[in-house]
Amino acid sequence: MEKDNLSEALKKLKITAVDSTADSLEGCLDCLLQALAQNNTETSEKIQKSGILQVFASLLTPQSSCTAKVANIIAEVAKNEFMRNPCVEAGLIPPLVQLLNCKDQEVLLQTGRALGNICYDSHEGRSAVDHAGGAQIVIDHLRSLCSKTDPANEKLLTVFCGMLMNYSNENDTLQSQLINMGVIPTLVKLLGIHCQNAALTEMCLVAFGNLAELETSKEQFAYTNIAEELVKLFKKQIEHDKKEMIFEVLAPLAENDIIKLQLVEAGLVECLLEIVQKTVDSDKEEDIAELKTASDLMVLLLLGDESMQKLFEGGKGSVFQRVLLWIPSNNHQLQLAGALAIANFARNDGNCIHMVDNGIVQKLMDLLDRHVEDGNVTVQHAALSALRNLAIPVVNKAKMLSAGVAEAVLKFLRSEMPPVQFKLLGTLRMLIDAQEAAEQLGKNVKLVERLVEWCEAKDHAGVMGESNRLLSALIRHSKSKDVIRTIVQSGGIKHLVTMATSEHVIMQNEALVALALIAALELATAEKDLESAQLVQILHRLLSDERSAPEIKYNSMVLICALMGSELLHKEVQRLAFLDVVSKLRSHENKTVAQQASLTEQRLAVES
Image (cartoon, rainbow, N blue to C red; front, side, top):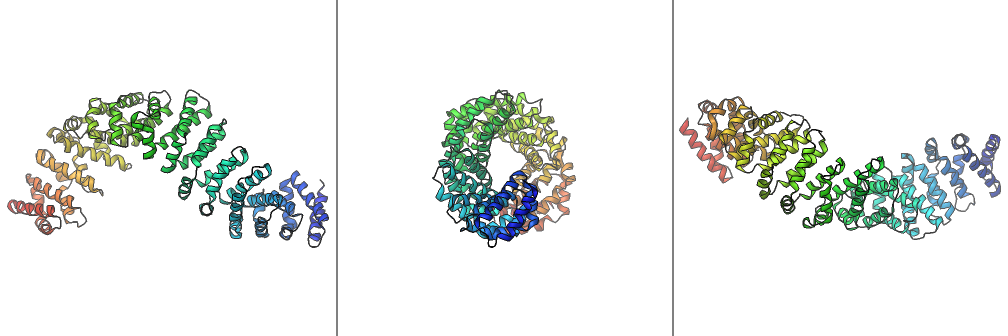
């Protein structure tokens, strides 16, 4: 088409738009559409320069026979980012939104396209549509047209879904607005009725993917049959990309516990197990990606208490049995998912006891053994998590110790990875409730030295906290002089004293009880370290501080009495006016604290 024709058409439009006949208008509009089809960007620039956009606003009337063409032209020019703002500034949004109320299908289609394209990545476009109330009208259309399955109607539904997507994409406020308008049940219904239509299905999936990130949406999704529809759709898919799209919706939805259970009941797990079976030995990139997504999603489903228990079925469940087979597999992704799944199954005592009695510990230790050297941190971390959870029930501890779990875990002492260190410490701490085990580990110089080193891991609060707690637990559970000597020789005392000032009452308490045992069993060995760590000053501070919990005050006084056996520390106690602080505590509201204050006061008076 000649450039002159375009300029001519633009000129003519400006003049004739006001009082022209429909025919002369039609010719000009056809001319523009033809030019846009040949070179959209260049034609759009000319349209913008000509000032014709303002004229379009007056042409967008339901009565005019040219309305659909004008809307089509706007939809075409708005494919260019630089045209979206000019469309808003030309005042096109209010008349376009008004046109959404008309009955003509072609006008609705072109209007939906125009609004959708203007909203794409444009804050101004979205605000204008929001202001004109466009979203509600489109949602009402989706509702009323939902059950018609003729091709023209499905095309219109697809355009309207796309418009809502462009309108709300990555904008929490507008997404919440759509959710409050009830878009979710409508879209789920659409998906169910039009599952044969690929374009519309895809549009619904993208919309779900956007909305599913919002917490409020998950509650609404839970009231629909989305789980059933997605699983039904998933079973039909052959192409990797389509499965991937559904996965992207399933993952955020499966964070909700009600939907987890619905997905399990809709048979998602069987689909996932099938994918794993098909892809496990493949080295094709998309198969590897699919295996990872499927096994990750499986682990996510097990995070819900009800969904997990349903799949465990008292340890007889076929899903549980299949997941057990992942652990000895040669695929690292499956080993990881298998270990994480076991950690999730091990969230209540009944399951833990059943699994330990049925030999899971050996499988996990074998898995750890395969990864001592290669440093696969994620698998190490997952297997240790599972062992830690399994060690929580009291009856499991001795069984796991005699199976050699402590030795298996200690092989990872060399690890430099904080997540592995953290789980290793947690597992050992869970295992050593028994005196014998605590004594055996507490005399292990390598372990104690590593713990002391990790007690200074300032960058990793979790590792530091767990190391302190394990040091204290070794003393509290073993009540052994040998263990205390090992800890003193390795320089652990100062860390236990620092732990007494922790912001967590439980840790303060564990430290004070361990320090009282040290004072009772090995005071002479530890007194110099206790003095240089300024234990007495810290106890004075804990007793003077009104915010200290009653059990902290009680254990601090027990400890003061125990320290009196050391001349060095006794002098420290005399130097600080402990009597004043302690006598005030005699009237403490907690009876146990008040009684201990009386006893401590007598002791201090005798000794002074």
